[in-house]
Length: 478
Ligand SMILES: C[S@@+](CC[C@H](N)C(=O)[O-])C[C@H]1O[C@@H](n2cnc3c(N)ncnc32)[C@H](O)[C@@H]1O
Ligand SMILES: [Zn+2]
Image 1 (cartoon, rainbow, N blue to C red):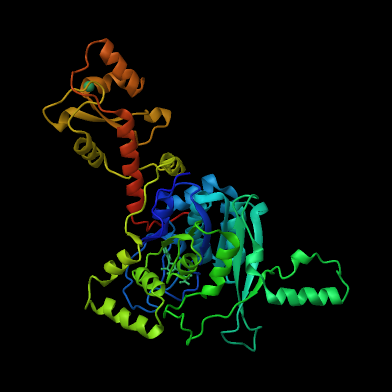
Image 2 (tube, rainbow, N blue to C red):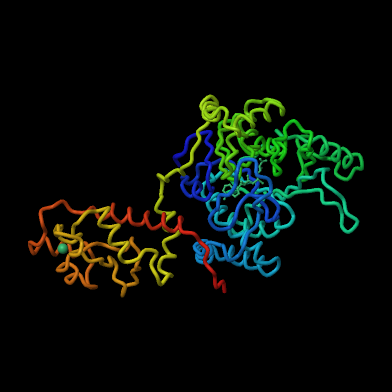
């Protein structure tokens, strides 16, 4: 499929919009670390994002999801098109509660898109902590298919505390799935001395003495990689930063030079830096305003002191052009608008289309739709091209009659003059009306509205409205 986004791009916005705008099968590897439902740090809410985040904020907005903020469209999409996923989320809701279920909805609509943008040979590594990892796995089984599950990788680290009440918690989980069984992997690139040791022990104990030579040092699913401590030079100051070595390992094993690596929750850019270091092309998405600063200062390879100095420069505004200049210098594409699909963009709309019919009310009022169509397509009857003296002469018709299941939404509306409206009533299609008018000599010589373009425009307009509507609905979620 054709890539419809530039290489090495940072999108600074909600990743759902970006993912939905990316062409299918354009990404080789996704390595990502979404916010957990920890109620701990500041990253996101389930519905639309209220952007209160300011540079330098620490821990003001918690990572917290509420069921009544789940976008009803997400839920309907999941319920209608992904039954297994719906049941997985429902199970989480019963076992762990509504907050976890809301978080899973937030994540799942994004995972559906991540699955779509992966190439047939592609892989995804999703980082999570044990709070929700099992529920996330159920969702990923539903989206990627259980046969495409490869590993539950345990990242074992030594930092953090201990407890007298439970065993010290010393690991995160990384779920590794592939798009198909034709995936790319080369484990010889990430040899592991510890696994060599274990193999030697097995062999000397004669348990499996005929171990093939080429299996030597192949890595296991428990990864001992040091977590960042307060003194690491790598440290950016961001509380959720992960060690570079962890993401380098993923990238080396599951991609090749020149491949496209995507991190839709890129934070302070660990995946991006690892990808760049190994000559992969990268796409990062984060709604944080400091992601670009982190990418640049980490690409510069400067030490921590210098990074802190530059952070001041950016924050206090003493050199307002600095970020833009560096963005250019490092040939980073910085975007604040999502890409537009050039493949089967209609598919995205199709995924949303079915939800229209389930609503009784329309997203726009009658008067709004009338005005929008007049503004966009001019004063003209779509049936006979008649140009009336003012807009009162045009009626808001249902293209597919309501009696045939047509909706009230703007993508099912056309402007018709009075005679056309009565003639069409609910017995003929708009095209049939046009043909009939031509035959009977009622068609005016003005240029005709291009129906296909008009319908594409109104449909996009509707989708845009759905996306932009604040979603604070109270849900009856039975
Ligand atoms: C756990 S952090 C990622 C840290 C990253 N792995 C690193 O080491 O730098 C999660 C990131 O997801 C971002 N995020 C949360 N919701 C998002 C959304 N809907 N769209 C884009 N980014 C989002 C947050 O701003 C946060 O930076
Ligand atoms: Zn007419």
